[in-house]
Length: 416
Image (cartoon, rainbow, N blue to C red):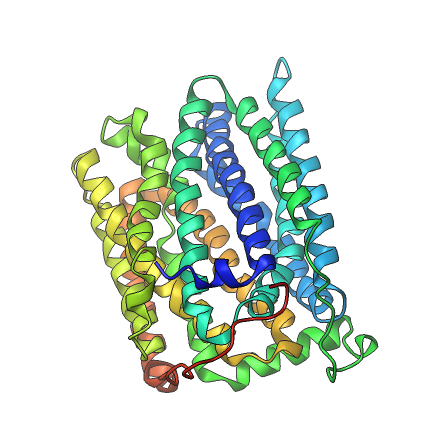
């Protein structure tokens, strides 16, 4: 792997380390939430509704978080949202340790955590191009993907194991501790204020700031295509809420954690090839093809006869999703001006976070009507069809070609 971003930027190292710690605990807790909801209700719809509770906070706070990221020191939002997320994890611990845990706190805390994470995420995303040189952005995206997928594998496996054994409470304790450690790391970040020459902070306000960001996204068909393709893939073919039910169908309840971890194992293999991805210039086409392969893998998942085939489908799907993610990140970071990066990160948040939440709801509702397997293969088919239609509607997205990296570009100085 290309480790240049880690070597050249102190602030990237801090963000990388804090993100790794947070992602591990968050993923373990996500699995524990689904397992606990299934334990308390036994309903696929009730599990899917966890995603529905996250939708409105995600939309509102994701867009407003983008405005704040372009108006304030991004470091401030990153720090204090960690504190709020740690408090939410403590609430989950208290509910899990109660004599009779309630279902409604799962939904309430999931909504609150969605709001805080959505408020924070645009600042995190917008900070990366400030601390990583432009010619190192693909390497940086691959490194972040490596961290994300490594922690997803470990967090999913541990979360599933502990939630089914010792109970969800211990998983939520791990999540709270992770947020505390992460806060200690981001405390040492250098300031990330607006760059000289950008619009004064007072001109980036509320609804008008959001509208400006949305107008910019709409004016860029290549950018818009990257958002919509990812959104379609997740809405139609996000399978996670169905894992506990699919595991039961293939008589492998013991493998729920492995099912959550398998896509990240496939993605991890792609992350390790980050240097080779630098050769690909047709980023739009790469995103579309990868999203289609993701849909095909979920379609096949609906017919998988045993746990081995299930895990194989998830490995392939995870690799495809990671390829799509790396080129989406690179397209965004290489072409969006810093003055709009926070607001566009808010739009980006909707595309890759709104999709899974809506997909989780779609999966639960369709499974309630026709079963988990039907929900999976129908969703995979819908994903492929939607990606094809978007490619026809947005030819500029498919034909987008990135410029070759400048030779000898200096490493990022901010935070170095």
